Amino acid sequence: MRSKMRVALLFLAAAVCMSSAQTNNSSNDNRQQQQQQQQQQQRSVWDEPIRFNTKTKDSCTMVVSGAGDYTRLRVSCKGPSQGQTPGRSYYCDFQGKPNLCRAYNLNPRHYFTQMMWDMRKLSHACQGPKVYRPAMCKKYPDEAQITFLASWPKTTSTKPSKPVQEPRKPVVPAQNKPAITPKPVKPQQQPVKPQPGKGPQTKKTTPKIGKTTTRPTEQPDSKASRVASEYCWKSFHGVCTYFISWFQN
Image 1 (cartoon, rainbow, N blue to C red):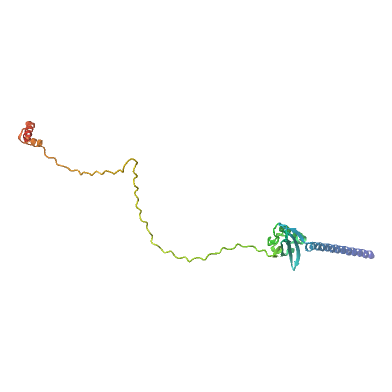
Image 2 (tube, rainbow, N blue to C red; image 1 turned 120 degrees about the horizontal axis):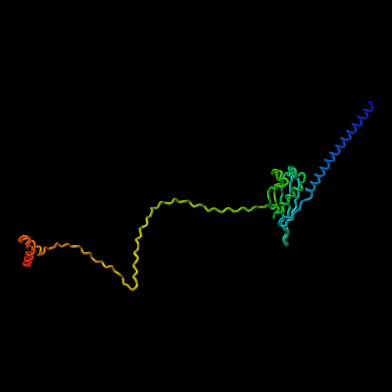
């Protein structure tokens, strides 16, 4: 019985060792496959440049290289020749840490392909935004993005010239002048236009005659009636008056 137990234990130990060896081998194989995939992805980015054309038909290439902890990108472009004159040539460098983005580590080439989609819409590949944020790593901070570093020839942005300010003249305090009152203007009498067919009309002025009161003189009849009233009866008053006045005349 004891011999049988020992044989069973030996078989179990051998089985455990074989299973552990298989798991170790499978894990090692997975690691090797991941490393090979990463190496292939790095080779596709580092060794094979990305080519594109800009809006003005400039042929450009994107080359990725390493600079310490940073990843550097150089974009080199050359414009089409116009007759005998060669086309323009320029390049610009970008730098950043896109490896901080998880999506970049899974597919780094697609990261720079998304940058290329933005650059090909430009007339000048080096006159785009200073910081590129591909959609796959847009939520990450600026440190994980590719930022503009330098360019040749240098792109200068013309700033509007400031207007030259003329020297200010010293301000002289205004003297209080006496207020001049305007003289009253006499209204001009407009001459009366003579009507046709009529001579100049002149107003006739008639002198006003003052009223003179003359006292009435006593008439002879009043005297006769007064004498008749003194010397005649009332019944003969009229007759006496007649005769007295006749005698007076």
